[in-house]
Length: 334
Image (cartoon, rainbow, N blue to C red):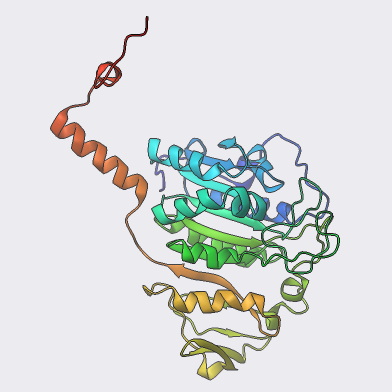
């Protein structure tokens, strides 16, 4: 939504007076800077912006935004965000979570948020570690990762956040990188424009407990050859010279030359092509997909709830709380 009466915002307008307390060099700084820049471009009044978070390093986010917001409880940010959007559909709601908060204790809540298609924006900071609690392995940690809670290496198979979102029926799914600010801004603007739940995984480096987790795809020296950007309506090409391409051969992905590259369409009904590309990040012999995996239209939960309430009020009247409290079976306790 945009507010034609809202005074234009700047990035500075969205900076709070709180000291930013992330570790020096944390990827969260870059994400905060990008989000503030993107929200300033939306034409939404500051009082109509709400930032909701759960628990974790990423969840300090609402303190650093000069907007309304809630720092809620572990894994339950989707429930708060859903209630806020349903109660006030005019708000632009942004939910901040991490791989631990959003894919462990909060995975169930996140799945239902996605399938309901509530019109909010979800940013999942993925650093493949629990940072706030000082370095335990997380649901996205790779097999073999040695941490304080897995001193001999993790034996868990990790979650793939993009695959998880696609499997939950998300209508907008994307991935970006904390050290790629231009790509992050482009991705966040597309997410903001989407009507429904937008889910953006952000590769985010934790310099203290899991430094360099994404270096083999995110490092500037290798990024052009180790990632390819899924841009709607454009060929899937990559490489410093954009001379390499990606195409589908049945249920497999082939790497070929740019002239044979597939033209990417995230609006198709089937999630199968997007799932094939999402799974590539588990195969270190192939480049990793970033950009927009899915972008489809579907009814939103918050609008459906409001429509239903309006229909019932028209036929039955607004009703009174006292009638609900006294209605049905009642007991007198002596």
